[in-house]
Length: 236
Ligand code: U2P
Image (cartoon, rainbow, N blue to C red):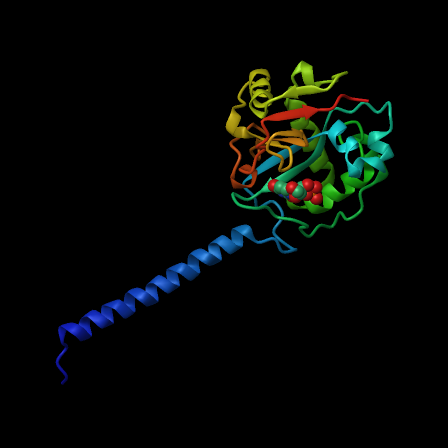
């Protein structure tokens, strides 16, 4: 019978550690993949929290996309913060385009949402891309959009400004925190593109849990506005 030398023993232990290490690495990689997966057909209702994305409508209307969007941007529409979407989120990334029986969004439902989400195209798109992953029916999802949007108190100065509002991202967050009980800075994310000096506010993201209460944001909202100054064009 061959004698097990110290060297053979050490090599065997090294091999075991390497194999286990690889297995653990693959396991972690798979877990991460499951969480960051973006593929179609993800399980509706399996997510951790929501982001309510509030778009600053005058910035959208002043930009390229808004030029052709008469529904939202025609002079006299006077939208300020509007709902971009209510997005189910994983701790990292988010599910998209989950399977649904409700592929058609009825006009009556669209009409009922236009005051807070003022674009037919957007309403349909947001249902398909995000709402279908909420685990809620279409009516339930849009009801949640309205409820959660209604639970955010928009500070007076941002309700219908007649002149541009120039502030810092921190000031915007502070104003919302002051106006909303239970809301703290880590539950908000300011978005303004990539400019470092001055930028238009594009949106404010508010994180909420599945029950609709304000909650801490996650990795998806980490990338925030880095501009020193943000400009919010007035309503028109
Ligand atoms: O940020 C650009 C676009 O990516 C989508 N998005 C972003 C962050 C997030 O957490 N979830 C998410 O879906 C949005 O795409 P949309 O819903 O507009 O198609 C966002 O506009």
